Image 1 (cartoon, rainbow, N blue to C red):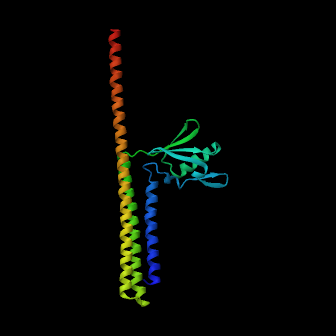
Image 2 (image 1 turned 180 degrees about the vertical axis):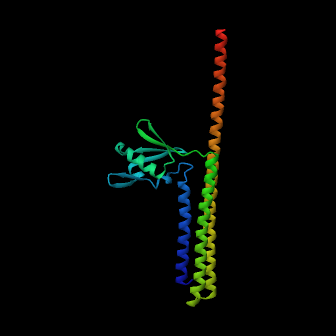
Image 3 (image 1 turned 30 degrees about the horizontal axis):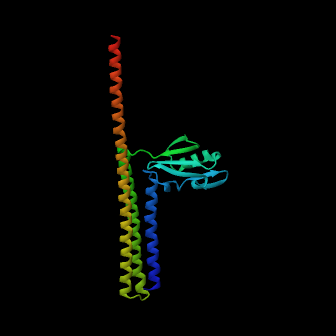
Amino acid sequence: MNNYVITEIDSAQKKMSAYVTLLSYRYMNLCVKAELGALMPVNVYIGDESYNIEDVANVCSPDEFQFAVYPKNENNQQAIIQGVYEAHPEFKMEMKNDGGSYILYTMPVVDENRHDLLKNAIKGLYEECCGRIDAIHAEFKTRMLEDLTKVGISKEEIDEALQAVDDLRQKSQSMADHQLEQKQNEIDEALAHYQTEQAQQKEEYEAYDVTKGFRMYSSFNDEV
């Protein structure tokens, strides 16, 4: 295949891959579960220097909905808190002490309202990504048909180039589809988790209320 064509196909592939990667990054930062990659945007300012969170703290996930952040230097604790807040103000923060001080972040709950908002948000981001891929595809085809005929590239080579970029578009679209499906499932799982917790709390409250009522009834009979 002509070197010019190969270069153009490689450029189209890089552009499409970049938008698929951007979609993944955006989904990761619509925090539903505690994905460590969601802390990538966090900048911790100590003095005049900016640090990534892994430079100043050790981070782990005690469960799928929480981050535990252990400052390497307790003097930097407030700077870490500020950095995380600026990147993700939606996180619920608690100070903990279990053999050492650390910061526990809990992801916002996915109730019915947030579930619908998140579903709409990820659909919008997905459609934007697919639109960008389609635009790159269309631009490539236009340029190939206009430019290559001028420089004497054969019809067979043009057809081969167009098929190659069709395949790239299909591959990129499939990757975006997969990411959308994964994020939809994650949001649905988080809603189910929330609903299960709510049901358990209701059961515990009702069980406590019945017990409390029984105690009050017994106490009243004793007085009588």
